[in-house]
Length: 81
Image (cartoon, rainbow, N blue to C red; front, side, top):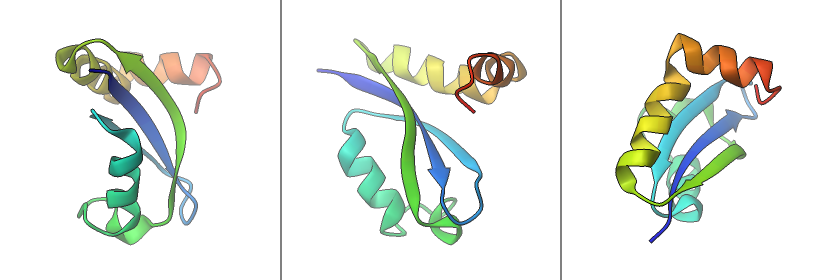
């Protein structure tokens, strides 16, 4: 099974949301349907960036890296955000 770490961008506010999942299409639909409390008021969302991983734990680790200051700097340096 493939797992994903991903970054969504709000078309309403321009803010980013970092997450991980096994089914990226289904997860994006949940965000845009208002089923995720944090992202509900900032809809609609688009998939901005994603990476694939072989294990769920690798996807979680990458998600948490995105949320760290080092991850933020990495994403800025790479021109991702």
